[in-house]
Image (cartoon, rainbow, N blue to C red; front, side):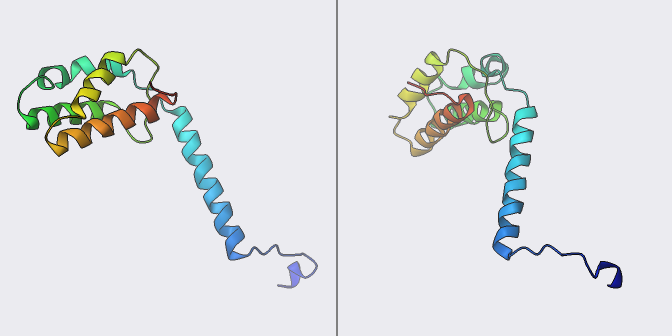
Length: 123
């Protein structure tokens, strides 16, 4: 255009444009994560069926309890408030040696949710 005759047009390579888009997307994710309130799992968990079903003998009941625990953690990436999760971790650790693979995998997913959500080393 004639009106833009003396103006330099900034052109980006495809790699630079992709990097800029990824950077903006990452910043948006961080903003959404920071604005989301942390889930207090110790208050939410008693309202679910977790404590009733985790002690059942059937593996399907244990899986249902673990699903309730994972759903109580909220959306990914998990943001869980700090608390004393020692008893919960002890229960999950015992479930890792269960004979049914689905119980083991759900228990491992729940431990991963706690580790990612709290954001601190879990012993």
